[in-house]
Image 1 (tube, rainbow, N blue to C red):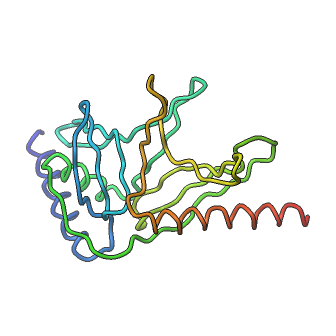
Image 2 (image 1 turned 60 degrees about the vertical axis):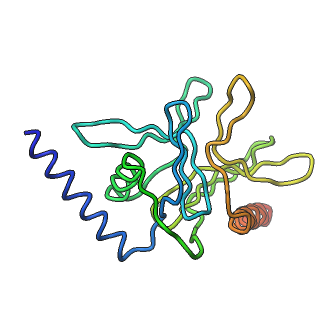
Length: 191
């Protein structure tokens, strides 16, 4: 039985390798560890902190950080491709990094304006390179609209689970989210 799982794991890694040769994916370009968790940089563009690796039936799987609030657990990250998830886990486990040059593609997936008055104006998600979905919120502050990315509160304050390394990418993504909010808001007012 163990041999079957190992063979399946090896085959899935090989398929991940082949798919990474032909597909535009997020490449792990840096790995570091901190307090028994991993921090990774993808495409030299975005950082995800506080990742855990777990063993499930002799297969390494990734556990992304979650947000816990009001007694509920909120998923903040989703890998949309099982093979890519296995590829990420094995790359982190083996400390294998890749070269990447170019731009990281993204698209807004979910976008739900909040109807009641408050600081949160919309819940949204952004998909990077068609493989990683990241939840976020459009917020209203003293200086106007801004985007809140995954973070968790610690005794020392808020600690970011998601950070843009590429400031131009951050600007493009956040401008698109804020434009989408204005468009949705205008559409609601014209009803």
